[in-house]
Image 1 (spheres, helix red, strand yellow):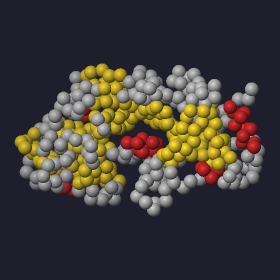
Image 2 (spheres, one colour):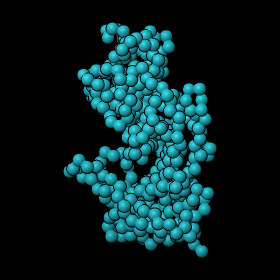
Image 3 (cartoon, rainbow, N blue to C red):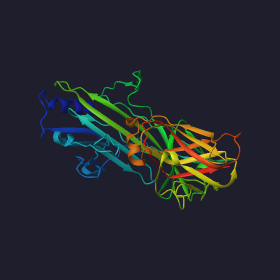
Image 4 (cartoon, rainbow, N blue to C red):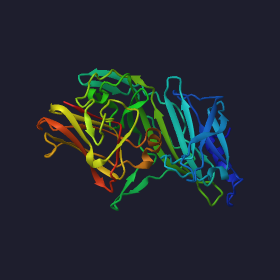
Length: 400
């Protein structure tokens, strides 16, 4: 009986050492498993491919159904492609770096994605299996603690592949090495209805969610995502060309219900500039993103308040934002810095699928100086290079 590695080697042999032509076949091998590692046998999987986009229309590329495969008794499958089907030009601004995708959704609502590009010949994909995160909650004095009951998922490099670590060159010319595939990165996503009330990377597998983040949004739910990306090389026995695979895998847990924070910000319904009538940034709604000039974002409180926390939801700006500064004033003339949130640079390759699904918005929980006096006005100021006079927000909440 031939192993999967030997089958891949034979297919690579079959390509020979000549140039690949548009009508030549390519084979993508993979395996689908249940969460317990047993084969997902006799199951139809739908591969999607991103539509070509040439910039002639405002519509960006989307993933559309491409080709079905059926898994064998051991869970293995083979996707047959033509060389020309891997060379579609995909150029848009939807943050997805991969032209092909496989998506699975389980009965409990958990999901997994496997996206990839290939070049030069046949390749083998990472095994795709669900992640049972066992996300559970524990009440705390200031909200709720989320904890994972399972370790983060990892990937095994197939015997037919080789992997080299990445050398990263920073903007200042310095270099460092990062592992390939990347270590699993954990992200937290909170929703209320159709609105995103929070998403951010999490450095730990226990995730504290404060009442300030939950606020008084109705029926909040939480889930976690784990993201891994990488690239592998496959060297045929008889060919001058190696085969390359670039990929990502993302797992998203089933959603769990959270208690309402029951906390109404003192800024709820407060007036703000430059808006003349109702302020859309303090109305407690998450459905839309509002654009405001960067240098004129002020909130006017009805009475003086000694503030302890600012929560900025769905922030995005044009340019390289280094930090968001929260300032307070009693007269609109003299301003005191109340707090500052420094923004880390996010490498696009590290979370291409997440930014494609959730967007580039930032969610900031900014502690404010306890020694600061009560203020009647609050101003958000953005610090950075190449900033344009515009920023987008979902909501700004101030708490005393």
